[in-house]
Image (cartoon, rainbow, N blue to C red; front, side, top):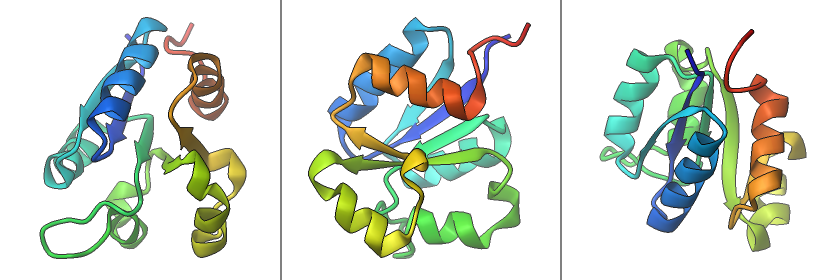
Length: 126
């Protein structure tokens, strides 16, 4: 059985590209722009990795980043943050996130696969 990943972003192109790349190497990928649906999947599916745009807002105005940090049930998987390449330095300063947990968009095939494998290992456990 392959590892499940959750990809959350408002950028439809990033969702489609990320999902395609990661499914091509064997991961099961749940991808959505809907923050509420993402939280449901996050809790119910227990993904190995959640990759998300930390600026996405829920209907109540809270960001996914703040919700994830404040809800113990959402801390189980590893997290990676999706950031446009031109905003990397500002994001790192604003959130204080290690570079190893930041994935820049647009995605490059080899870089995305390598970074995900470093975080959670190959798609299939032996």
